[in-house]
Length: 261
Image 1 (cartoon, rainbow, N blue to C red):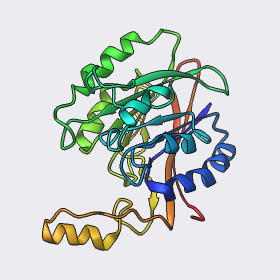
Image 2 (spheres, rainbow, N blue to C red):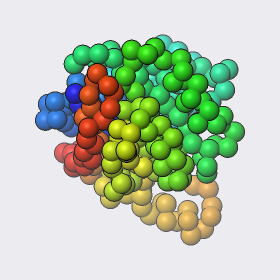
Image 3 (cartoon, rainbow, N blue to C red):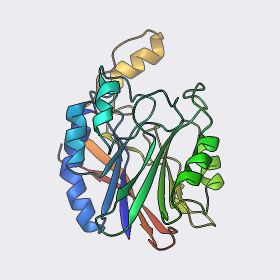
């Protein structure tokens, strides 16, 4: 079995590129299940009802991260979307859910867990290691395919999570830093790992934002708007091959494709 995981979708251009590329990628790699991190899909920060509608035409599950509440009213809107996850290690008083079990059209079920790192991201979040331990204890034993989106800044924290969960989940896939890393591997226990999947955003940009604006902010230290670049979009993803009977990953294949957007 194969599943497709799409890196952080940035802005309208990212959504258009996803619509253009994902159907073809699913056919090319025979992927019956698709997950995308969509937390930057609404004008570069957060999610909205219309963005969820766009993405849900092509993906089965939408994960998020530290920007999940950046769009006004999404804390209310998220309740209507069973396919949208927010970090599981947020307070239980926050709306939405941090994990779910979803039917795979190709057969079986897939559990998806969304976690947020603490190092350099949000130290007020609960411990992601304790949180994922608790979730794994809650999942029914028959659920073998488990994918973790670890939305974190520090490579060390992501690598630690990969080894912590090795042999217990199918894949630990890093998001948040928007740059696809060169460390995709199958860990000794059969868990696929990559520090960061990358982004679906502008090739010539700084993490999807206008180059000149970002440089100006670094040089001056002044707060300013950082426009999203909506053209020249590259889609970064990984394809995970796995045994649905054991949940063990057999291969991880990084993908990076320029779109026509």
